[in-house]
Amino acid sequence: MSEQVSFGYEEVSPEEKTERVGAVFSSVAKKYDVMNDAMSGGMHRLWKDRFVRRVKPREGEQILDMAGGTGDIAFRLAASGASVTVSDINQDMLDVGIERAMERGIDGLVWSRQNAEELSFPDRFFDAYTIAFGIRNVTRIDAALAEAHRVLKFGGRFFCLEFSTTQWPGFKDVYDFYSHRIVPRVGQAIAGDADSYRYLIESIRRFPPMPEFEAMIRAAGFVRTKVEPIMGGLVAIHSGWKV
Image (cartoon, rainbow, N blue to C red; front, side, top):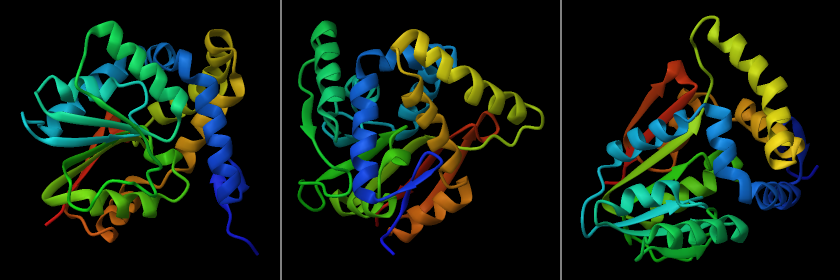
């Protein structure tokens, strides 16, 4: 039997998942940031601010922002004076990010189409690797983590911001109802695409729990791993170091 991976609640071949995830993000690229505000009530901005504070970017550092698409994390990182490479497998998402950077007068970012599982960058090149709300869409998460470890310098740091499962009593049920029933309708109303947002919610449910994902980060070679839950684990910041 051929290998199967999850695409939301479906089981598909790795090749089909890669193709279908690409179609999802091509579909939502233009409205991606508007939808983030609508779905989270603007809280995603606070989560991203907190995430970048944990990364502690410094002037002169080389940082890879993987699945960086529309530039939200990269713009925050670049404000420190770090040299930021924004990578994404989806060119439509990168095109939106480049346009946003031009509108904001943000120069100096490097935009590079990359597959997180097979990066073209040399070994031990970056001081930090960041990925926000992207790792769950990768077909082979273990391969992406191994590549993150490979391209980091010794002493380099890995940071991942991703949805997880909230442990707050009561809130979990409310969020489950909101995400499964309301988000696809909002996606249809704003982006004209309910199916893509239905997948994005399902992909959150299929993502490994916090302890399991932390174990995957350790298995990739990272040490001093840490998980910082936000809103009871609705969102989590995962980190680790390469030594």
